[in-house]
Length: 268
Image 1: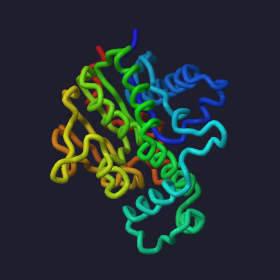
Image 2 (image 1 turned 60 degrees about the horizontal axis):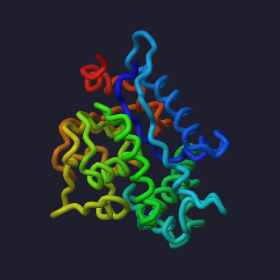
Image 3 (image 1 turned 180 degrees about the vertical axis):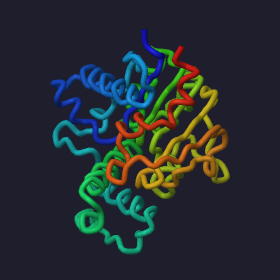
């Protein structure tokens, strides 16, 4: 018996699809098994299955002919926007090559690798309406099939999940937990959300009864780390200190003690 949780993954998960021989279902199963282990590390007790399923969509953001996540101009624009949110926008030149060199010269290896993944995958989702609808449809199908009491969405997955609940009003969950969410990132994501924010504020989707946001204080994707300033209906926020290197991984977020108090009422 599962705990009735659906997960929605973030950036950089295309390798699961490749290792599963081009099977989205196989990729989702592999991710679910890992996420169960990660969450068990924070909750303790006897090992169990927490996740009914992880909604897998990374393959839908890729062009099979090139395996690129987004056209170069869109990725370049979002890379510059992301860097601007870090406070260094005035130093970013107009080319992706120069931006990448700039990032590599200033960030440690894992941060640089994150930057090279973040902008193209975000751009692929936000600039291609067909892909955007297919990704949301895949997440909606997973939620509808499992009817989870809890949805845990990490990174770009929090953006997809937010839009999916709005796009499909039949979907419901008791608790949405967003981890390392870039939902509030100005110029890159916030203003481009569907539905668009009204008077500078988004809103908790109608089908979500409670929304908890958890972000690492140094997560360079979760800018700003607190979402209550951008969205109405965020019920609780947790600012955590995960790891100065692994500041954005699902493993660190799912393993952090901050999840326990919010999840335990749903674990039975």
